[in-house]
Image 1 (tube, helix red, strand yellow):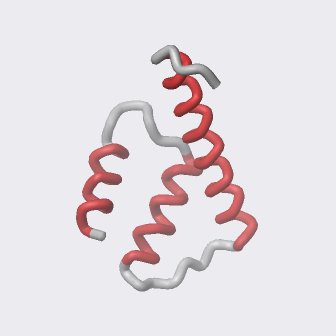
Image 2 (spheres, one colour):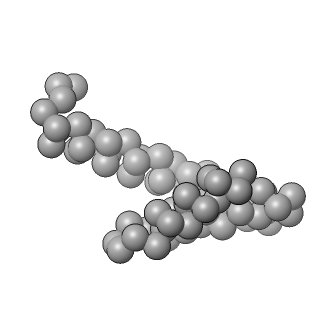
Length: 71
């Protein structure tokens, strides 16, 4: 857990890579990792998680295109 938390912190500190949804998901994950409750409404949490997954998959698709990978 310590290594993945450190990796997330390093990635977050890179320029122009965060958005409100990713910061929200990170905050929830850090609380959960410490065994603390997350008091966010399920719909709010789900919205942030879906936004982050969508952005991740879109970024991976774009990277694949740049590398010449076929869909």
